[in-house]
Image 1 (cartoon, rainbow, N blue to C red):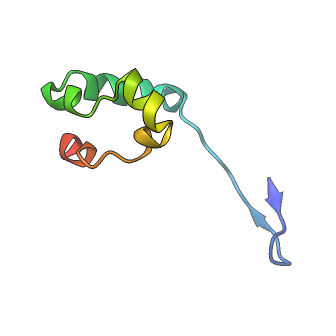
Image 2: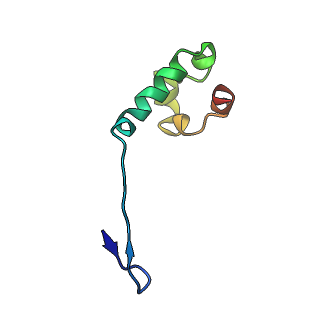
Length: 66
């Protein structure tokens, strides 16, 4: 497609892999099999007390990915 954002034009070609649609599920399945995964899980009680904010920042997630 052609877009004009700065006074000129630029052709843009976006390619999406069909596998990308399931990337979150693949990532979740990889994290789910790690023994440390349960240490970062949030309970319903945590969610009820702190709301969605309790899920947004997890310091230990980096250690699971590394």
